[in-house]
Length: 329
Ligand SMILES: NC(=O)c1ccc[n+]([C@@H]2O[C@H](COP(=O)([O-])OP(=O)(O)OC[C@H]3O[C@@H](n4cnc5c(N)ncnc54)[C@H](OP(=O)(O)O)[C@@H]3O)[C@@H](O)[C@H]2O)c1
Image (cartoon, rainbow, N blue to C red; front, side, top):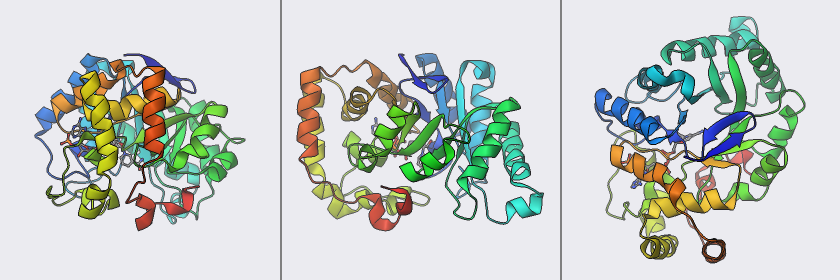
């Protein structure tokens, strides 16, 4: 697979979101299946794996996903770029004696689960307004110097937050929601990142499955499935957003590829520093998604698709339910 730069880290154009094996999309497969799925993705050429300390907390326990990913990638750990994320609760730095101690403690716990002694990309999963991002950036800078992490990032942030941390410790990547249905960050964050050599990692790039065309108004979502609250997955919004799907389908048919592949190929063509991390619990769909790197949209096809897409109204943005809305600009 072709590679892209997230500042100093070289990752495959498409990474693998591993959350669904533990968290967020209902029942999970057997551990052996998930491990094999991750290893197959690696064999296919993927070198970028995304997890977080909290993945698993609904059905299992915090760290379930990190344990699974750690076990899966252990044989080829040095060959991959491993990303994980932490949350910092307001009272923790006081209890630990310092913010450095808190972040270091989270990092050590993640590394143990992930069976590694360094993390390539360590994200602040959500900004806690009680903890200044400049202080987090300072600690991340120390951890880089100590060789415990290679780079750092923040998730669901706007340009104001990014600008505050840049002079302290420049970001390796920002990880925000981005897909054909969620394009708020095209206005400021994506251009800012491009200008300042910050990678942009797009999560939920298939709009939680909608852009594959496999979700219909009849689809039922179970326990621990984010789609019970994701507004795009409300029946009326699934129906209202069909024009986006019809547009994708017309390209998928003419190029003999899948809808999900068009959704991913579109963002790869649109920006040189955007790296989508689609998530799937299914071995075949994982390879289908990774295979999107080979789907070439010509300049003309892309322009036409992008122009037509921009004219279609989209319903059910996550900010309608207050999903980290304060950081969307
Ligand atoms: N930073 C953050 O706050 C944050 C938040 C959410 C997610 N993430 C990361 O981003 C990754 C991806 O996000 P996501 O999983 O929410 O969204 P996504 O990749 O847009 O969608 C995942 C959903 O789409 C389905 N799907 C994926 N590929 C498909 C295909 N080719 N055909 C049909 N259905 C397909 C999956 O079902 P199946 O499993 O059945 O294939 C799953 O239900 C996560 O794994 C996680 O690592 C980060």
